[in-house]
Image (cartoon, one colour):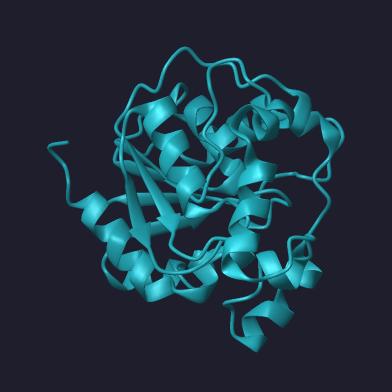
Length: 228
């Protein structure tokens, strides 16, 4: 039985973000841990996030770590603390060793990529949640999220991601319709920073909510790659 450790993006609400995927992984015979992070704690940054996740994984030695969006900055720190068989970065920020999440945006050109994609796709370039996060969610899923969200404090964006190298196989999954981190951006960053190609999955930035079955099927293919 594989343990899928499911990390959230900014706001830290893993239980909500992953609630449609967890039962599907469990029905396939695996353990699924959606691990909330203390996003609104001014005393918590990336080291505290990684310590919390590592503690939740204690005693488990067959782990696939799945990190969404800003969770990509926590993933390599967890892998340095606990045995992890593979990492999946889902519509994620891919850090360089020592980089901060605050510096990442300009370093990869996220804003230019987002605006260019909006102009090409014919949707507003001005950011709002409905256009960039909720556009492909059904109304029930979209409405359920607000009560779970917390502001991400500055410390998490200011803490360097202190790791030496990606020590385990890394898979990069990108939503075909992600408007916040457009597909072209994710493909370029994956090649430049990890030397890997992107696996394209259906959905936008919140693919685990809009296409849980398809995303679960993808995660199970990663779980099956025990020789990678």
